[in-house]
Length: 582
Image 1 (cartoon, one colour):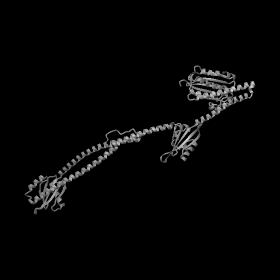
Image 2 (cartoon, rainbow, N blue to C red):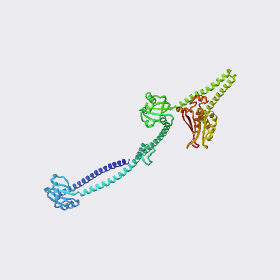
Image 3 (cartoon, rainbow, N blue to C red):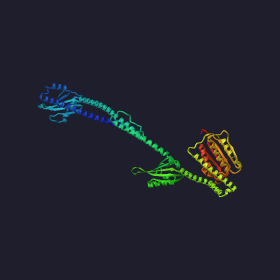
Image 4 (spheres, rainbow, N blue to C red):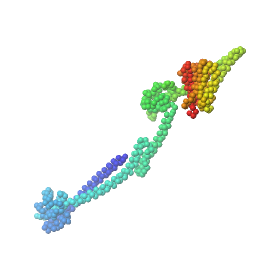
């Protein structure tokens, strides 16, 4: 902007200087011509007066007068007769010799042939004015010559006055132009700087306050524009942040595709669901990026029909099979302008799993309840039909009815216990628990049963090993694990409960040398009613809920449980409890 001001001032000064110089030259020439014309008229009148004097008076009588007149006029008076002989000469008044003077006069006379009118010639900086006069036989010419020094002096004075006056005028004009340029250019420069900042996105830029006179309207308009842009920018940033937060944190996957079929946006949930990197997806055709043909065909249908669609999809992602409820809708702008489509992926895998669990739970509960109820009903009907009169049969049937009733009671209690554990408000009665003492109490319950099967029940726990937990619930965990270990361990086997601590955890291992679990079944053993050996489990009175209860109780203690097993060699359940304070 400074360069613009410099250029503007340069061209203004150049224009003004050119105008003033041209005006000076014109005025100088006019004044010079005016002075020369005035001098010519004066010399003409003087020469004509001398001619009249010579016409009326003899030359011999007026010699003294002519000499005096030449001195007074500061001019040289020369009188020639018709043959151009010099009759009188008042003497030199310029730096020119008499011989040259005579030669110049004769040259002028030979060059100019005139009857009774005057001629002016300029030679060697001397003005010559010749006037013929008539006096009978004594006719001739009067030559009046004067140096041009006076004219040159006047010209110098004229040019000096013009130069000084026009120079002062130029200085004054330049000062005024500079002031005016500053007055008008400064706000324009400031406004331009602010406009550049606004173009860069710096909406906080403002033109400084000042007395800008006529340019004040521009300054105020720029500042109002900056304020409005800043407010709009803030509102847009807030809206953009809200929209970005909503898109990134919504639980469903979002996919935006522009009108060309290129992916323009994917949110975090979509990236997580399909394990995609945004750098590999954005601004690329969806058919080249999306790994599932069902999704590509779904998007193709939306592009073709330009209608909203909904479809259920079951997709294999990695080693998992997931269920999605997919919605797709075209994005239509103003004037029916096609802008693309948006696709929403609702992951309903967990809902499907819970629905299946619910179905399995109802089926399993019905099945588990049906067996003891059928047994009780059948034996009761048998007794009523007359078997009660047989004392041996009566005792046998009543024993079976009692056993099935106990099994039914255990099933109901465990169902209620599991339901209570899974409730949102379930709380543990936390205290400092001695692991060795809890293991000893749990093992004592199964000593007799282990002895009956000749199973070596071994416990090993360092003294003073304490964790923060619910004593009764921890004992319940160990009882369920020991019950399974003894149940699935054949005679002369071994069951061990060992405790140890690491830097961050307290570990409890429940080991057996039982039948083991196949690797493919390990992920399912903590499901409700799931049994590895269904026949043996039902014969032993198991309900299939024990391990599910164990898993929930361990997680309630902020711990975890892992399983390692080999078929025919045994199983190891390891419970990981965090140390107190972690």
